Each structure stands twice: as structure tokens, then as C-alpha cells.
Image 1 (tube, rainbow, N blue to C red):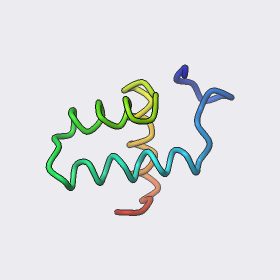
Image 2: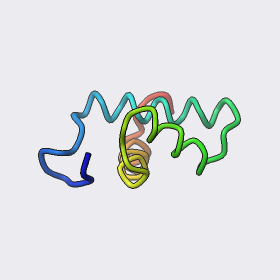
Image 3: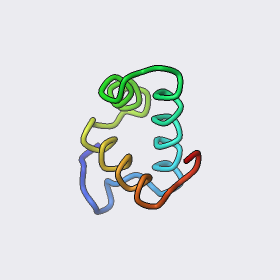
Length: 65
């Protein structure tokens, strides 16, 4: 997937799922960088896409925050 704000961007429900997985990985002891790598691999995304989703989730205070 290409990181963009257009049609290649995952749907919101998918982004929320990615964000939840990222938070859970960190809660289970994975460091920030490692959790991004794990989640990117799991969901077939680039690490930049995961960082963008992470920022969006933090700003919007998505669960599980």
C-alpha cells in the first residue's frame, strides 16, 4: 500500500484496528519502534503509514486510550 491521504489510505475502521494493535503491542512490552514494525508487518503497511495512523489515533483519542 502506498502512504497517501487518498484512495490508498486504509478505511477508518481498519486504521482504528491498526491503532489498537499498536497500543496493545506497546502495552505488552514492545518498544515503540518494535511495535510499529510488528504492526506494519501484520497489516501489510509501511512504517510511515503506521506512524501516521498512530498520530491520528492519538489526536482523536481513539480507544484503547
